[in-house]
Length: 81
Image 1 (cartoon, rainbow, N blue to C red):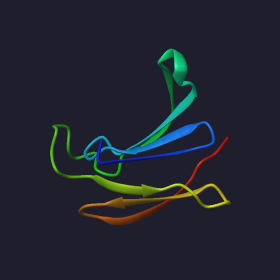
Image 2: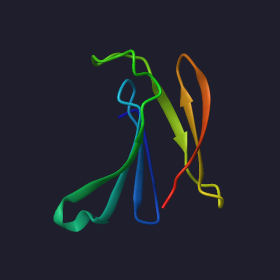
Image 3: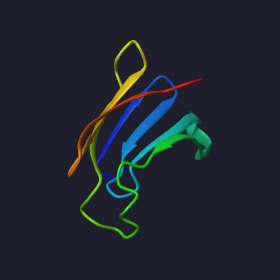
Image 4: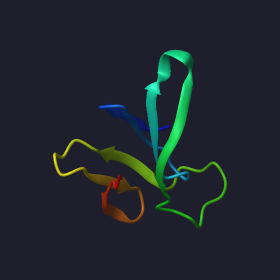
């Protein structure tokens, strides 16, 4: 994980070649994390590499998420219900 941010009941992880992972952390006290959403900004990389997602900003009121990729620039995403 390169960067992790939390808000409401979600954790947003920029995870290099694994892309953006959004986890539901409602039951974190019991170590129960659930996958909520993901976006793979570098599907061409399958190995653990220094490629893909660098950082994420999930704090817009509109629920827009900005994901920064090392090679490809910015992705502007929207988290749906």
